[in-house]
Length: 262
Image (tube, rainbow, N blue to C red; front, side, top):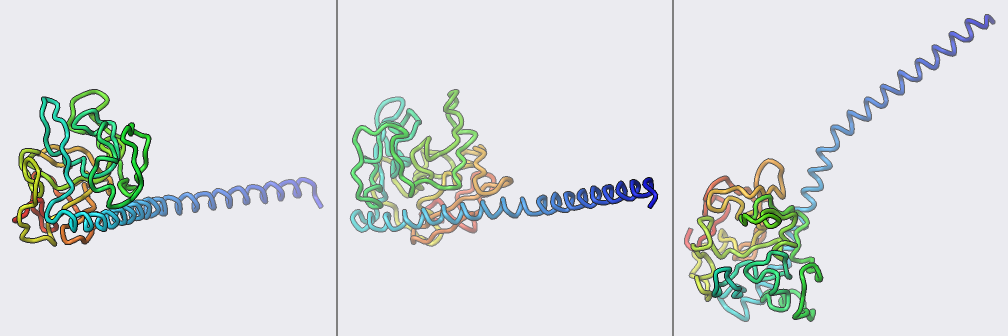
């Protein structure tokens, strides 16, 4: 056999193998490009489902709490920056957060009223931020906020509301118009007003429900990169996940209401 022909044949065989390899790599790259968005969405869905599971646990505790304190949601007084005290919705449950206002970083798990209805653990009175974990109050979807509403460097954003406030969830105690417009917790505390439609009135939700408070946008895209959604526990104790939160100060939508009388 001609040596030159053998060499050319070997080269052609190698060239064909390289082309084949490149085609395989291109196909794999195409498949990865197609699968990654689906895998990302699957992760978001799994986290949202787990978030709903946390709210179901909270619902069990809240039901027991309301049996002991009829028509009165878990509430606690916290110090105001200008002096005096007020009911601080964020103190209803959870642990010490890092926010140095309203008692968030000083009033920990031992003092937050709903905690003992989810666990009989003994919490320390001298708790410091970051020293305690309460997984049932931490949403796997919690991505914090790019705008806390506090114009202080280092406090103007948060990577996790669970770490910042002590809980990924918030009590329905005021409307989107602001803290001076109470809903299920009267000003100064006390019993809930009569609720006309408990199926539609939310009671505890992810912090994302307040994303558009007072017309702002706190950039809380926990469940979807392009829009705001929230997981909610309603007053009849059913849970919904990934409920769309429309832009603007809308206290009542087709899906939920902040108000006792929608």
